[in-house]
Image (cartoon, rainbow, N blue to C red):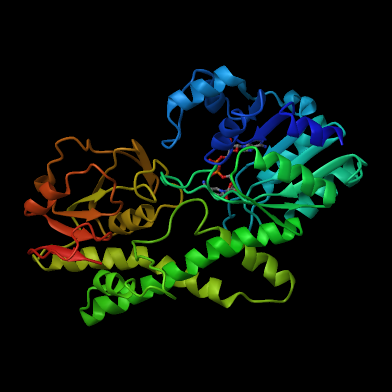
Length: 431
Ligand SMILES: NC(=O)c1ccc[n+]([C@@H]2O[C@H](COP(=O)([O-])OP(=O)(O)OC[C@H]3O[C@@H](n4cnc5c(N)ncnc54)[C@H](O)[C@@H]3O)[C@@H](O)[C@H]2O)c1
């Protein structure tokens, strides 16, 4: 097959659609092998930044973008490049709408763009996290009905879930096994050849649906286990038991236990949202995913528990939430990333504002943050004067913050991340 030969001999032209957290690192990795890799995104600001060798993702240093540009990485917002591509990889967002059901609009819009440009003998891969059946319904059916292309003869398709873990310095694209699900045998061969170029281990599964479900299992596994430990934390709080100490002890068991940690609530573009892609699709099969619903309920209750904890802490010094000056330390959804999507800091801060608190935040990676219709600017993290606040809520435990200074200050602390592991001082309240 000509296309297989092109991929194997590094002559294929690639376009990655969506230059976000998933698409950009993937395109840069591909550009180490293939001399022509386009990074297509309708967001002109992103494309301009990339063309100037700048990066807007913390894990990707500007030098990596500049090296990519030298190698042949081409950031573009002109969709014509799709017509000259042998491989198209779709990495567009898959959010939920206001009713917590899948919003497939980005995948559909991306496919409309593909349809206008795509030529025969192209491999189209979906990487966006979505429910089982999406590659069949949104990619393959689209090309077959609207272009009259035949799968396995005129085009090839498959699904390969992205497993990127922002902030993880140990496991990157290259050394994280890559699951692939081709829609038919030729597609599978092409996917295998493509991803073997950039990943040490490729894991083939029998169908795109299986690959789609694999990704959901991985994320739902995390979601449900986080909910379990969050529930444990709530109970431990009532029973005056240190949940963190319990986890440390439990994880000494060498088999059959894997530690998960409680927190102020779920965040990010994946773990809080992906389960609802499955529960939505399950309903079509008359199936209720009870674990997902229950986990969602527990995890969603954590931000309001944090507001209660703040109220309790202020009460201990006879203060009310109303009028108190509260600093939220870290608003990113997790440590050392500059991503605040779905962060639990938002409902916590909204809850405190509603109760009349004066709410501030400090995050070295998030300069501006909107909450309850207000656009806030980060307090400078350099020489932060904790004493100027009535209470500091440690929401995200970024590295490099002066937690000792906070500990030494007399300010009330609500520590949601076990930064002050096992330590005790007046006015310190731990989850
Ligand atoms: N961020 C993660 O850690 C992660 C991990 C695994 C999987 N995923 C999944 O990968 C997908 C992408 O996530 P992300 O975090 O990279 O999102 P993102 O928002 O960072 O990036 C998506 C990009 O797609 C662009 N885009 C929107 N419509 C487009 C179109 N029609 N054509 C081309 N580009 C378009 C946007 O401008 C944006 O730059 C989602 O399905 C997500 O669930 C994300």
